[in-house]
Length: 252
Image (tube, rainbow, N blue to C red; front, side, top):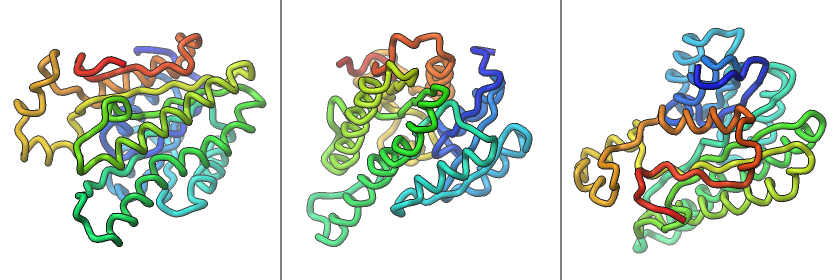
């Protein structure tokens, strides 16, 4: 067991696959009860929840593209186990968008990206803070190295949303540390998730790793290890900090 999270209750958004699923597994192995949020990955979410057991894992579906869904997700999550101690904001929309896209597509993808990656998280924070002010709590936001170094042209909107997430989460850390609320950011580079497998197949792993001095692709478990450590309370004075997980490919 990496850390002891016995008695803790966590909500992990985007928990059916990738970093979210790895975090769910590790948090549960570390003793926490978990609320697994998912949107489209119902089969994967149900399999993971079955592996963990209904006493320790509750499922909540919510489409964070819809206004109001984040607040509903928070209420359902609290109802599942009575409270939440840890919020892991992992769900994100990554939708490539070219500069020459039709105006309608341009507007829709920008709006959906900012809704899922920023506004829904702001709504979750808004719902969580009064809850955390009573007994304390922790937030871990999954951003990206793209928030700091930018991204390719077809993912500029994604980079912008992650930059906004960083500023939002730092604001929470700054304003609520005295109230017993900690907030951290993890910023992965390339992670070998289901989503990235198609990119790896197209670009080739060697090309993707050209600027990664460590020379290997990060795994979801490696990111989950950092999330669990931050959730443990062993690094309270790091609140507001960003932990880079990118194989030394970018420092800020």
